[in-house]
Length: 253
Image (tube, rainbow, N blue to C red; front, top):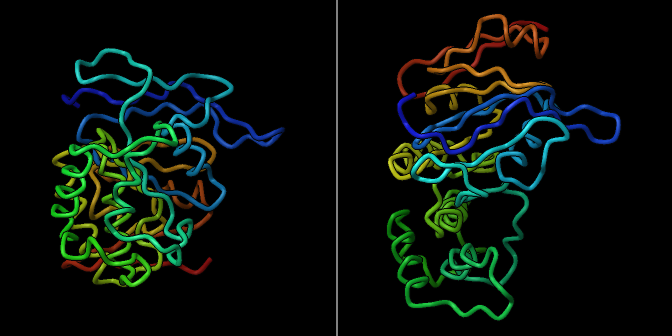
C-alpha cells in the first residue's frame, strides 16, 4: 500500500494468566485504511483493539506508531467508539457536552474548554448533522442519533485513526445504512478500524479484512479465503450480497 503506515503490530502475543488470547499477530494499519475486524466471540477481537489503542502491551512482539512523516512516535491521536451498551444514556448530559467530553482525554480535572475546543465541537456536530440537536439531552435521541453523537465525540480530537467496536449494535437497519454511508465519507479524513459481527455489512463497507481467532489472518480487498470460516470457526459460511442489502446464508451446522 502506498499510504504511510500508522500502526504496525509485529509478532505480538497476549495471554491472560495461562490462557493465550492472541498468538504471533502481525498487522499494519495505514493512513486512510478502512479495516474490518471479524471473528468469533472469544477469538481475540477485543484484545486486538486494546493493542491498537495502546492500553495493553503484548508479552511478546511489539506495537509501533508512526507520525505524519512516517517516523516512529510514542502514540498517535486515536478516536474510539466503544460498544453501544457501555454508555449510560440516562445520565443528564446534552449532545454538545458529550461531544466536548471527547476532548478531556489526558487533561487535568481543572481543564477549561477553550474557544478552539468549542469551535471544533460545532464543526463535528455539523459534519454529522447533529447541530440542531446540540442542546438536547442525549437520552431523548433515537438509537441512530445517539450513535452519531458518540462518533462525534470520538472525532472531536481530529484523530488519525477511528476505532469502532460493534457500532451497529441496537440501531435499526435504516440507521445502520446511514452510519456505514457516513463512515465511507469519514474515511477521507482518517483511517478506520471497524470491529463487527455483521460480516455481510463489513465486507460491503471496508477495504481490507482482519479475521481474528487466536491469531490474525489479513485479507486485502475483502476477500477472505473460502476455507477460513470453516477451518477457524467451524462454520461453513457463504456471504452473498446484491443490490444494497447484505445477505447471509448459513449451511446446517
